[in-house]
Structures are given as C-alpha cells and as structure tokens.
Length: 191
Image 1 (tube, one colour):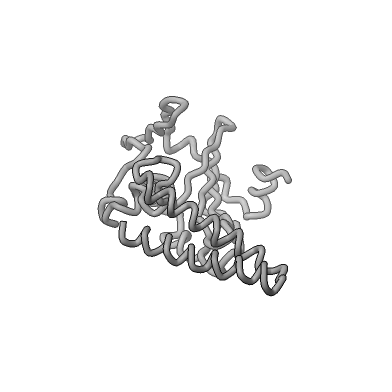
Image 2: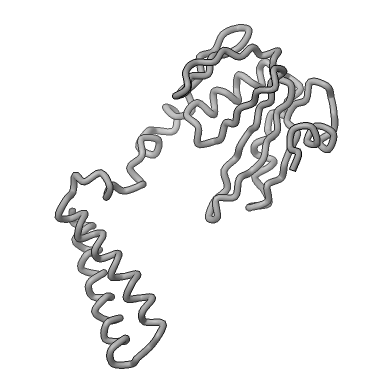
C-alpha cells in the first residue's frame, strides 16, 4: 500500500509538471509525458482504491516468481514420467508419448523484445510435435529426463544457445537419423 501511494503521488507530480509544459511551453513532446504519467497515476490510483480487482494485479505476483528456485526446479509440471515415456497433461487432455517416438529436437531462443526465452520443439514419429519453453512448468525436470534417455544430447545445449542475446541460434539438439541441422530443419521448418 505504501509503495502504491508513493507511485500515485509521484505520478500526480509528474502529470502536473507535464500539464504545465503543455500549457505554458507549448511543448509537443510534453503530450507523451502527460499521457504516460497520467495513465500511470490513474492505474496506481485505481489499484489503491480497488486493491482486490483482478485486472489490476501486478504481473510480478505470478506463482512461479513466488516459489523458491528448488521448488521450481523439482516440479514435474505438466509431465508424468514412466520408464518408456511420459504423459503430457494439457487443457486438451492427456497425451502419452514414448521416448522412442521422439525423432528430432530443436533448441532456440525466442526474442521477447527485452528478454529471450529458451525453447525446444520436439518432433515425433507420428508427425505430431510440441513445444516446451523455459517458462513451462516442469521445464527443468523434462530436460533432466530427456538427457538421461538420450545420452547423445549435449548436456549444456540450453546454456550454449544463450549467447549472443536476441539471436535465435537454432540448434539441433537431437536427431534420430543423425542428420545435420540444415537437413533436419528443412523437413520441419518449411518457411
């Protein structure tokens, strides 16, 4: 509450400053500041007046960020593991996938403008595929199981594609047919 009140107060001061700049100095750029700080002040004022409104919740209060890292690391998330495969639980139901159905795995980074997100596209023998990202619940345990079942996978592939930032750095993590990156990507990424 104290933080919200501080932002409302700061926003109102800045809004007042930009109103003065628009009126007195006729500065065209002041309109941008007026809109920015005016909207910020309004948002924090609404948050102060209606603290339980779901449309005003902070994005920082997601359940993942409130969990300790070891809890996130050890969470199986959407996966249930078996000796010969795993079950993938999603809104569409439950899908069982055998380890030997996995044909090809690509790793890459998705550019989210201010950050990157490490992703893996997994292609199966039945022409199905799925994507898992570092934001997927169960990411760490999935990678651990994947590396156990496929010893040919480079143990640090996800770390190696981190740099340089904002470069997708498409990487062939695993291919059952031992194709090159170019050969495998032509089959799965046709555009």
